[in-house]
Image (cartoon, rainbow, N blue to C red):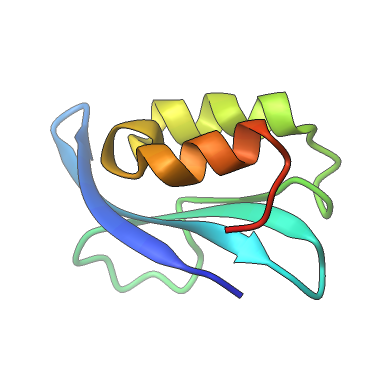
Amino acid sequence: MSRYSHKFTKDDVNYVVSHGYDNPLQEYFLHVEIEGSEEDEPHVWEGNRTSGKCNSDMMNLYTEWGVEEHFPNNFSMLTMDLPF
């Protein structure tokens, strides 16, 4: 499984955004937590296979949460349906 993280600010709130590809599940995922929050549940958790999202849905989420900006190569791999 690959996992990459970056910090992202949206609507004056700081987030930690993690994304990657889970080989056993063959799934792209996005996990967003509010920075410094002690909540157990993430703010956003999406996986394209487990939530029934197609790759274009995941591309929209990756763009919304800054993955395309911070990790353009990973975004390109997603557009080609390749693991990273």
